[in-house]
Image (cartoon, helix red, strand yellow):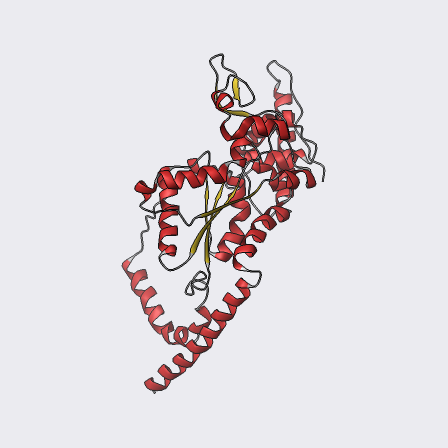
Length: 351
């Protein structure tokens, strides 16, 4: 489809007619985004939308403009809440504050009491994934760390299916985040499982070294987490160079990092004066020699969501087997049959 991008405007105060025209064009842009969203199977951050729009004519230099257009479309109500995936650091924690009358409360429980017999007769069908552990029969126990919120949104359907914990590093994450992952690994290791941490992030010096860095982190903080990661397997599943080239993902022609230097310029790992460059942290010099002064952000995978999810599915299949979920469903079905027999026995006792 063709995206109707808002035009660039010159300086000066626009007239009332120009403002109205600009809003009409912004509204058209928002409508095109909504139509495009209907063909996607995930929500995305503003940055993720930029990578999608790049395949519809948006240049890399216009990414900031596109983010501003999206913000303006939200400001004017052309894009509604939850259309754009919110960064986790801005999440709002809500607490219920209900006001139910005593009559409604009593009627509700009275209705449940009358429906209880019918519910009991049919409850075998309700015994499923919320009652049967997926991991009991597995050799490995998997958790996932990703580098961008878009990747978390991309992988969530698979993680839900396999009961895999997933978190967004958002930089290098936090000590509490790693401690929670360590606690899950420790619990599953105590029941005989081998811990596996899958990671997916940017193709840049730090991203390529993430497996080694995470393993070192869990070792250095073992006193804090009270878990020894000696058996931990850390595997980076993407983004890898071949995947980027095969799918024509977007490169960024710099190795800029967060923050500014003393002159107010973005810090760049390719700068010989950068501390990490001097120390050759993450083998920066080897990276530049092999790939050049460029990087590919993990967000770019949103343009090939099916292939992106396949990265994760293939990794899961390597550790668990390709038929593990079918075996899990068979176990649930067998237990449902046993439950139905017990239900019929109980009902006969009541006669």
